[in-house]
Length: 155
Image 1 (cartoon, rainbow, N blue to C red):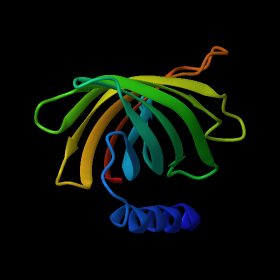
Image 2: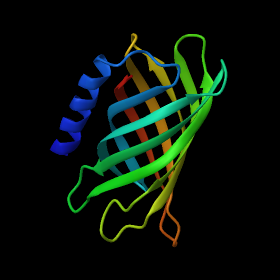
Image 3: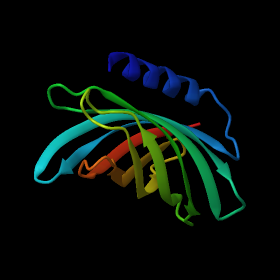
Image 4: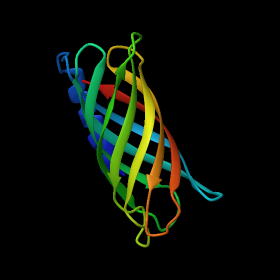
């Protein structure tokens, strides 16, 4: 996790020296809760991505993430996916998402996360976001849900 935090800090430092682009890259740190049939745990992670403008009102983006359920016997789950959404007139982005997620633990199954979120500018470079994710696990394993809040930097 320290490597991820140091990488995030390095990317944030590089972002301060990068000129504004029509499309934008982003890095963030996030945390929240994940639950499954009455079992609730904290989750934390980092993510990065790139959003491509699809005109004045729409965008599409790619994402990579590293998240960890903060309970014993869990490991980092890597996510790879994307999002598609609409830009609001107030510096916000409303989007749907889908990600492939590796296993959260040795005995867990891989999953596909689907969900939605909202990202809001907090200045020129900073943003905050809130996401809901539903993890489709399969193999007769109950699905899992999560709510994540994040703070990030765009460049």
